[in-house]
Length: 214
Image (cartoon, rainbow, N blue to C red; front, top):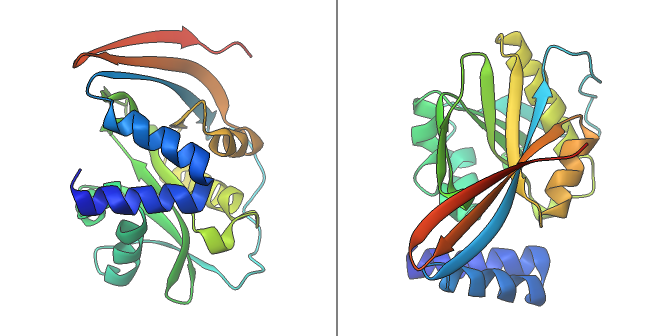
């Protein structure tokens, strides 16, 4: 990661989590070449089961699957989420779905969905999903729109979109320390299935898997 991206990531973490969490995350990043340990929880939902429908939005938001011509929305997402910089348009071109919530031309949140072979950067792992399965690469709500239920609306709407396209299961994941993300997943019906324990010691990677007790 270049210096400018590192600074942006630091500022975003500071805005989102405050100093204690930001310093812990920054130190973890700086020393990850020598040592890292992360626990990444995988969750899954059956898209064929009945669930609540997406509700009408009361914030004046519109929802749209982004296309290659949605330059402004793509640029906004890449600006806020530095790991997507320069890559979101390529992902869409390769077949990924990006559902965005828009207030006028301003992006309020989005859910990026991948298919086939996907990469999980937090645990440095690649996985190939079967036909009929999808992977939630990122879901995010911009700071001004949090605590509004928008995260749930993005989830319910992407469930409906994937169901219409014939997909049967949606997978996703979050660090076990990301309480907010896991809380949202449980709220909309995901079932937690497995923890990936990722270790990096002196540049060598290893993984351990443990089923989640329900």
